[in-house]
Image (tube, rainbow, N blue to C red; front, side, top):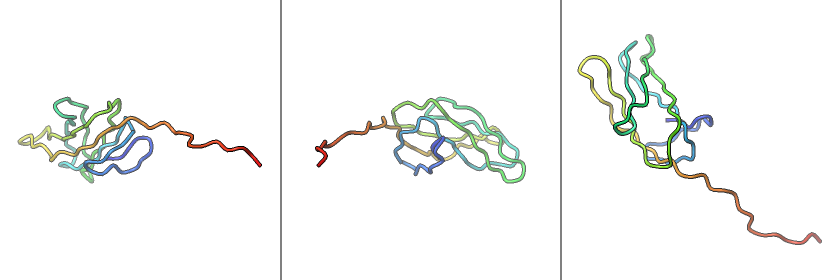
Amino acid sequence: VKGSPSGVEIANGGITVETAVVLTGAAAKGQKVQIFDGTVSKGEATADATTGIWTLTVSGLTVAAHIFTAKALYGSGATSAARTLTVTAATAPTITSVKGSP
């Protein structure tokens, strides 16, 4: 999982302030997967016909914990292991001191 637009990898169980992420995974070549955040579908992606790699940008994430899974839309409809992250509110910068100029 990478933050969007930063492209910075977000570790499983990690924390981010980004409300859009790019999910990447693997599936049977050319097949579709459905991506879920908990029980809510966030869309479908098609695995590349050559590599089997799929990507999906999920935006509009709220400040909360998110649990992503991918479900195969082929075969037995197997579901991936969960990948989790937490979106936190961005912290505003602060001014910690003001000094006179000599």
